[in-house]
Amino acid sequence: MSEERSLNFIEEIVEDDISAGKHGGRVHTRFPPEPNGYLHIGHAKSICLNFGLAQKYGGKTNLRFDDTNPVTEDTEYVESIKEDVRWLGFEWANELYASDYFDQLYAFALNLVRHGLAYVDDSTPEEIAAQKGTPTEPGTPNQYRSRSVEENAQLFEDMKAGKYPDGAKVLRAKLDLASPNMHMRDPIMYRIKHAKHHRTGDKWCIYPMYDFAHGQSDAIEEITHSICTLEFIPHRPLYEWFIEQLELFPSRQYEFARLNLNYTVMSKRKLLQLVNEGYVDDWNDPRMPTISGLRRRGYTPASIREFCERIGVAKRENMIDVALLEFCIREDLNKTAWRRMAVLDPVKLVITNYPEGQTETLHGENNPEVEGGEGGRDIPFSREIWIEREDFMEVPPKKFFRLGVGLSVRLKNAYIVTGQSVVKDADGNITEIHCTYIPESKSGSDTSGINVKGTIHWVSVPHAKTAEIRLYDRLFRVEDPSNEDGDFKEYINPDSLKVITGYIEEDLATAVPGKGYQFIRKGYFTLDQYSTPDKLVFNRTVTLKDGWVKK
Image (cartoon, rainbow, N blue to C red; front, side):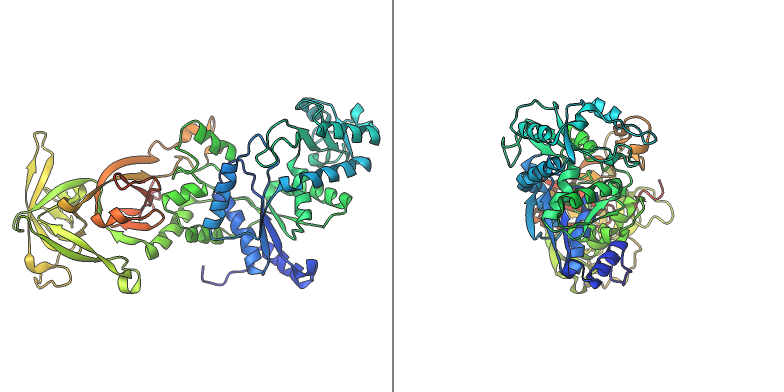
């Protein structure tokens, strides 16, 4: 956005810290995804915020993978996250992993045990939950809470040595079972998981919980501003307590509202369900709110960064209309997409007075929104062309400014034609339209003196390429599928994908994935990443106008 905007509340905090000389005026942020799924548009907001702050204030950002749960994590997710961050236009100062700190974190935990601030608990998860009490009633201590420092240290070392099965014991911080904050009621720090880790292999069979690993990792890296979403507000006292007790670098946590987008779901668990149960092709299905899905659909990094800029950084949860995201991509593609012609519901138009077997080369500009049109391309023209079925009516009503029997229209970049007659099949469907053209009416050198109100697009029959066209729409038919009764999957939009075959300009045979094209009058499209020269596939990024307004 070009206009000057006011600072968001996190920028105000950062500027105050710099003015006060806090941390030597340094700004060091981190983006800490868990590699248990692909990133989505909500993560894009966090990426833009963390990396954007560092860029604005001359600081740096770490990409740190929160890989403390070996059961759900995978190197495929690690690689996809790195690709998404780079595609959005950001580069990290350091690539780090919570697993880099497993030895340090274990030492920190042992330190708390030796200071009587942590204990080994043999209770089951159900017993622990019951002993924690309720928000209105304090928790009750169990017999393991009074174990001696020596016994706890030995048991914790035995846990690390693999002497116990999964779930037999946990390490808990010894805090306050009467705290009004449930997170402070002796939270679990370590659990036993005999599982192979994607980086440390079988070295560990105990793994730290997020609340213990996260703050300590921030402190080890000397992160100045640890930015989280609002649900971490009740975790902040624990974050600060661990850092204080261990006397580490005083990283500080700040919370902002996560991105909620209508007509989709943002929970990784729900997105994984959609993938695993076959409702979508994969994480990068163009209907998914994942960054890889948006990329495959034809969204640009600039449009997503602009979207994140426009929604801003707030302290209160709210639902953002997906129409704003669609507006941002339309704005970007209007300036950058090359114009091409594609006929998606074809009917043949025969120009009866055009010489048979003749082809001429016409010219079309690439982008009329850009000065100079960004160059142009040659368009072959012939006696037989495809036009859209909706652009012709045999008996047109008044104010129908397209082609009809007795009606004239301009063919884009070509000639004025007048409808004469139709050919129909046995069922009465029009199979061919016959028309005549005015040779003096050629675009760019028209001397006919004839004015027509309508212009339609077309593709030459002998030169057209066939393509599979995928018309994508919103994945859900309700604004907030997670808030509806029953299973969220019941609200999937049955029209979220329509696959048709269309005819495209031959120039589009050299299209490349990631490049945006405006199919004139039809929408914005991009070549699918799995398209082949033998089978061209184009995905609709977005319609030319918001078709949901009327709905």
